[in-house]
Length: 79
Image 1 (cartoon, helix red, strand yellow):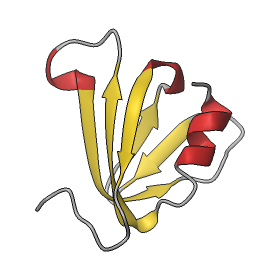
Image 2 (tube, rainbow, N blue to C red; image 1 turned 60 degrees about the horizontal axis):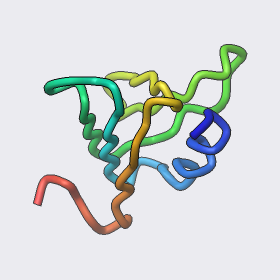
Image 3 (cartoon, one colour; image 1 turned 120 degrees about the vertical axis):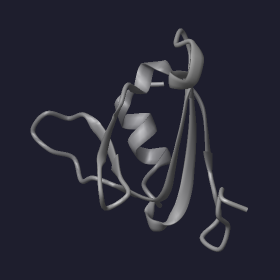
Image 4 (cartoon, one colour; image 1 turned 90 degrees about the vertical axis):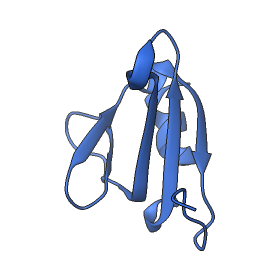
């Protein structure tokens, strides 16, 4: 998937959804990323896909995303 497709898929992330990403060609703990209460960072001049949890920004390599789980607004990955 490319950056535009991933940005579209994550467009509903407004701080009320949890996101879990799985990456291809990455081994170990780095192959998965969970972000609680994820918000997508608006597109900037660098055109990188970024999510934030309000404390950190995560730069996502869109072409390495195998799949994404985007929780419903009432759902939390912590359950």
